Length: 184
Image (cartoon, rainbow, N blue to C red; front, side, top):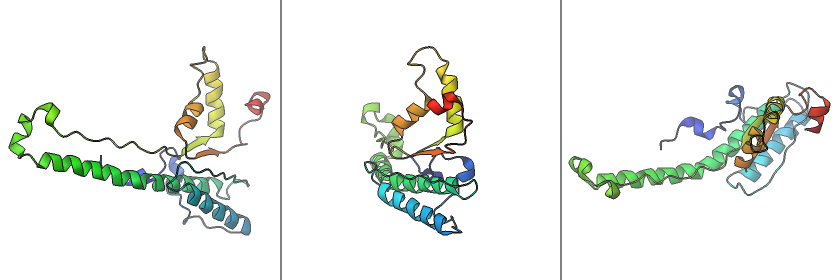
C-alpha cells in the first residue's frame, strides 16, 4: 500500500488547480486578505477532525482567486486527513513485511494459505468533494430523464454521501438561469 505524493491532494479537484496552495495565493487587496484568512480558519477547523463543521462562501468577480482558495482548502484538508491514515497504513505494511520475514524465503511457497500473513486494509478517510455546479446541472438534468427513482439517484447525491468532510460548489451562479435551474 505505498503512498504516492499525490495522495495529499484532493482527487476531485480539477487538474488546473492541482498546484493550488494557501501559501501560493497572493492577495492584492483587503478583501482577498480576508478571504485567505477565512480559508486558513476553515482548514484549521477541519484539519484532522471530520466531525467538525465549518462553512466558507467566497464571492467575487471572475479571476480574483476564489477557485484557487477553494482548491487550496481541499488540498490542505485532504493532507491533514491523510496524515494519520499514512501512519496506520505504514504500520500495517510493516507488520505484513515482518510476518513474512519470520519465514525463510525458500519456505514461502510451502506455507499453507491460511497461515500466510494477510495485508491489513486501513480504511481511507472521507475526503473533500469538488463539484462544478454548471456541470452538475447538466448531469442532474440528464439523470432526471431516467425511469425509476432509484436510477435517478444523482451523482451529486452519491458524492455528498461519501464526502462527509467538505464539499466545494464551484462556479455556483454561473449556470444558465431558467425556471428549472432556479428550482434545482
